[in-house]
Image (tube, rainbow, N blue to C red):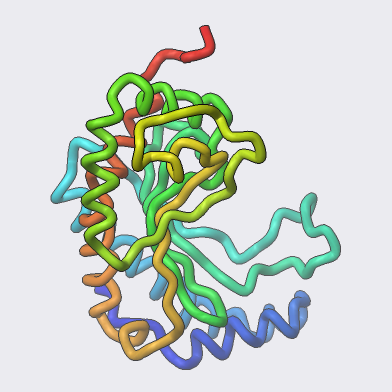
Length: 224
């Protein structure tokens, strides 16, 4: 069971940020595994099991990120990340075409929410088509989201607006990619089991929207 991260977790993240080289990492690898990777895996597994029990129809899996950067894409950076994340998503879909529920821990703080790593133009076209055909359905979800103050809509807009839409949906309709995100600075909750409860409750709040977006993959191509 997840028992929380520790000051050593944060110290390691800052350490790898300023000492991003093999010799430093190898000397501190045990600290990484014990205070960073293992608690992250325990957190991911616990949140996943609770969420799967509540929503088995989603058939999700969980995945914890690797600390190693892709050697083909270093772009002058060191070989290690200074952050880790886990995600819950459907196993039978491409990562760009499915929304994920996620938690990320960085040296400065942590964040969690729901969204796309890199939504394809087709995925967003399917979303706009749904808004065109049945705006009332999504407007109900959007208004429910407006009643909470945890998650904020984030994401790049198209430079050229995609056209008209139902009133109240403009800030959704013209998104090139989107996410619903909550960000926090480090606080005591990070070091307690309460963090697992916080993430599970947040993911539950996002469930109606997650269910809506994950079903987009079954829609026909609106460009045909």
